[in-house]
Length: 132
Image 1 (cartoon, rainbow, N blue to C red):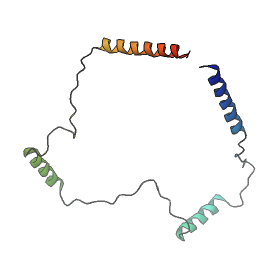
Image 2 (cartoon, helix red, strand yellow; image 1 turned 135 degrees about the vertical axis):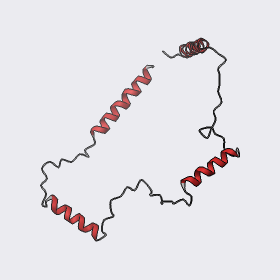
Image 3 (cartoon, rainbow, N blue to C red; image 1 turned 90 degrees about the horizontal axis):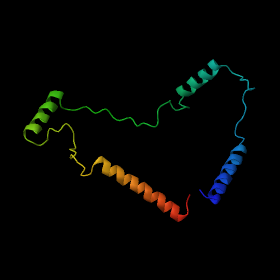
Image 4 (cartoon, rainbow, N blue to C red; image 1 turned 90 degrees about the vertical axis):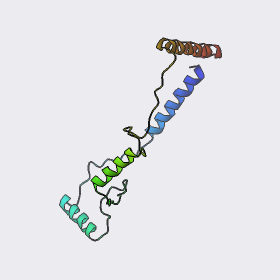
């Protein structure tokens, strides 16, 4: 890194630190005393649920899917699958995608030497460009 980049990075760190130090969002509630008991609060919440004032607790991130009933039995589905295999409509691959076998024409040492040469070239380019 050159001097300008270091000075800029340090300035950003100090600015971020002072911005965080100015945040006074924390409120101390340690001296708070409630006027109602836990049981009273629970009873009031239950009453609000019964009257429909509060929506029932539910996970709103997930959408409930309707339960679908099939018109076919398991045996019917298996028989249909067997017919598809026999008529070659469906190949017995154990999966949906067949991946081709790929063989490299280079040896491990060739690849290693290529990576080392690329690293050397990258380093030389940085030195000639003025980097450290």
